[in-house]
Image 1 (spheres, rainbow, N blue to C red):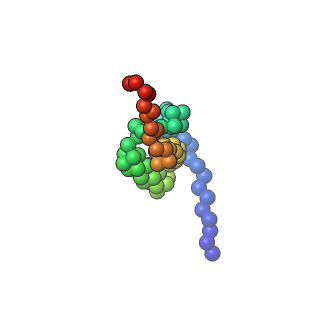
Image 2: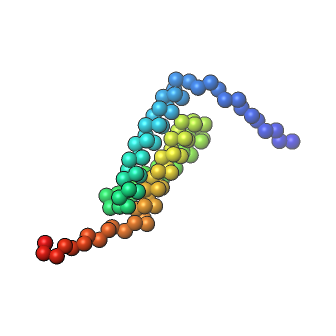
Image 3: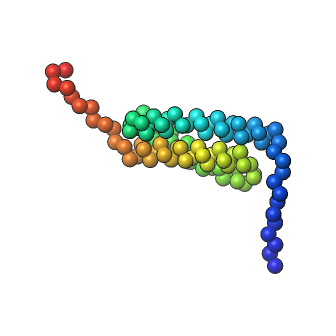
Length: 105
């Protein structure tokens, strides 16, 4: 017979609090880029190889966080991944906007 083990969460430590603050700051750091990309409908300045590698790294960090049972790492990378995938989707779905030539210039 297989018994499910239920572990009660341990109280949050100062280390956990530090991790959550770092997670909050690094996750919030992506919001302006995501907002600017959405607002301007332009991802011209986004490096596709950088964001692909970065997103893959975020996935690996998230898996690492799961393996070591570090919720600050899991949460931070999960939220950052959502923003990075949004920016990647905008980059892949948006084409550079053609510049309209103005007569006489």
